[in-house]
Length: 319
Image (cartoon, rainbow, N blue to C red; front, side, top):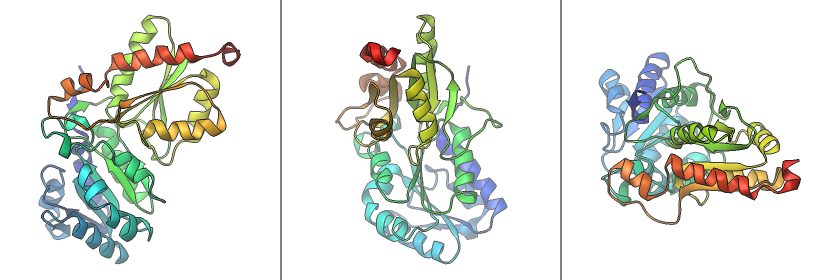
């Protein structure tokens, strides 16, 4: 049985480690200190923590000022507020100037659960991906969230958006596993088709691959934890070698991971692509497991998409 930990907790641990390594790291939060796990940093380094109440736009403006003074700000709030309520500040005050600010959007996707549609960020990968110069990371588990947090501060110069979740999810990677922002991880080899997933959907894709293998279908599984910039080399290789792609994300189908992969392959290696995600609807209140079923985000939905993609292969593409 895999341990289950929220990805936001991995962020909290990474932030503590950063606080000890680099005194330039400061944390800002908009009245969600405990929910975002920024409170762990506040307890350890109170002089480097700044609370802003329900004032996300002010928070990002202040983060810009701190970055201009040489600090490395982590601005934390729910993803729906970071990408919606303060999008103008993120675009103009942060990204336009190329400032070294790390934006932490927790409670991403419908797995937020009972908080309902207003607090379930299902558009933020799109909203952040379209901003020039913005790096977007969607960790698959708490281990990746911790690594992404540390790398975002120490290895990436410029704005980074990290999408985190509220609910516990299986920890499918190990502490010593390779992880690098911008480089996808191939978790399973296979040449019949490739399944490309991010965030919570990586685990669902793992389950799907296991079931497909029982039917003699060898699916390659790619953890594309960085929707921007894409690891084009891994994606192109998968398309050329398998000739069929499935993408899976806990996000709207418009503009997210599936769109990013499709945009790239349409110009470099057109192959059949089936996308698993949320189809033009808002979220709703409910238990995460129930919502995943209602929104067609389960391993069974990935299996169906995989078989559909295989059926779309033409004889010429199979040669």
